Length: 218
Image (tube, rainbow, N blue to C red; front, top):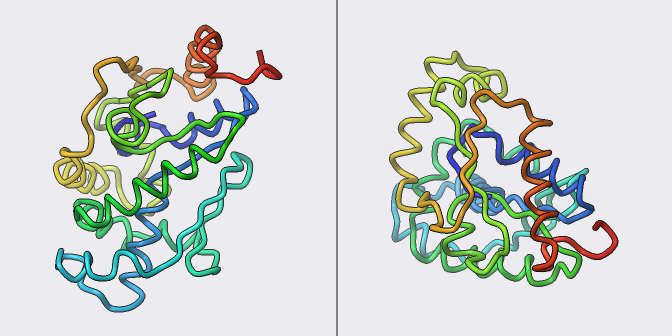
C-alpha cells in the first residue's frame, strides 16, 4: 500500500492485516529508525555523504505483528522515539540518499520474503520498487486538509502547521511516491477507517486465487 502521509496507510494496513490474518510491515519505520540513529549520534542528516557513510552501521529490526508493531535499533526499542517531530522533519532527506534506499529496500524485501503467510506492506514505492510483483497494490490518498487534520493531533501542532509541513514532505518525497500503473487508487477523504479496511480486504479476497490470502483465511 502506497500513498502520501496522512492518507491513513498505517491504520488501514494494520486493519487489513488483522482482518485477513496476515503480517504487517511499516517500511517507513525503517527509514525513521535510521534517521533516529543518525540524529542520536550527531550526524548531519542534510549531508548526503555523511548519511551514506553511516547508513550501514546500525542494526534495524521491525516486527511484523499488526497488533504490536515494534522497531528496534541495535537491540533498543525505539518505537516511540522514531515518531518524534525531529525525526519526522529529517527523515525525507535521509530516505532520498541512494545508499540508504539500497540498504533499506533490501531489508524490507527480506522481511517480506521471510513471511510465508502473506503480508501487508505500506509506505512509499512499495508497488513500484519494493514489491513490484505484489498481487494487490493499493494507492491510498486523501485531500490535503483531511490528511493534515488526521496528523495534527498526533504531532501536537495546528492543522495549518501540519498542512504546511505535509506539503514540504510531499515535495521531498515526490521521487519515491509514484503510483504503480496497476495499483487500485482509493480516496479516503470521505471514508471511515472501517470502510477503507473493508474495501481493501474485499479486493484481497477477490484476488485470493493469486495467493494474496493464505488458505486459512479464505
